[in-house]
Length: 366
Figure 1 (cartoon, one colour):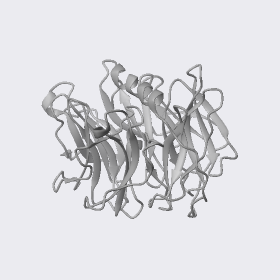
Figure 2 (cartoon, rainbow, N blue to C red; figure 1 turned 45 degrees about the vertical axis):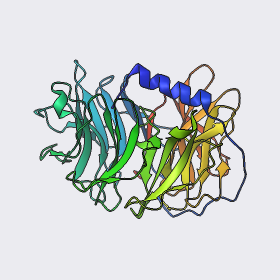
Figure 3 (tube, rainbow, N blue to C red; figure 1 turned 90 degrees about the vertical axis):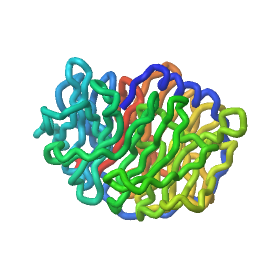
Figure 4 (cartoon, one colour; figure 1 turned 60 degrees about the vertical axis):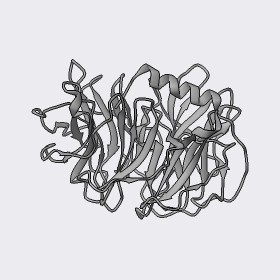
């Protein structure tokens, strides 16, 4: 997990250069699910908060100013967090949705580990990232047991001057999706088996995966049946910033651009129903929440730019009927919101120090 100032400036540049269109087409189908508690968190400043979908009962997780929480376990019974030491070294922890049972998984890890996601479908392992703080040779992605952060398995080795951004396990648990950034910040999308073997390159060299740094999981996503991957990428051959949403088969075949180049894209998240992809797009240089079908149909803007507001990094509710997203206003005040897929019911849940990592679980609201 990075917090480099240069990477944050990249987000500003992406927002300032995006150009977008406004078609209105039919909404996608949905699938039944339980919309439970919401989780939002961030790094530097560090926080992790669970909150009800109506904005009530916010609960801060873990030691104040030292804890980042970022995702629900597959059954939403636990929250995955990372506890930062006084000298800035992260180690994985878990907690209950109400903040109780906060547990540092292993106090004797051999290097820094910031854990990003749970394995699917069981949640028995965690996908984690090391920056190699003590030894640069350790930098890369790893998996560990979710119970005690033991049985460390290396998944990738970071290129010199680069960074490996892990998105997560495929829903069937057979592969891991990540982007390998080189020293020039060119990002290549790759999937591997959980032991790091059988790498498959999913994006061609003329595309570079979009990375917003502190929205780690939103640049690419598995389809619910694990057969395809959606991702947001910049088209490098055009000489200016042009980006789009792409879909590719899990074996690397049948790459397809599914949004027009003039619309742009900064993220891509597949709905639990499999019918729709949510992404950050917008109007007049101000990114907004959009959706599109995987075949390129049904392109539709969900939020509207008002008074310079920017909506970023939409993720899905469990039942695929709502989006959870970050907002930045013209004063740079960040906040967390939900909205229906027809654009109605826009609801503010909480102000935040900066745009947050977001996840919507099924843990019952209280």
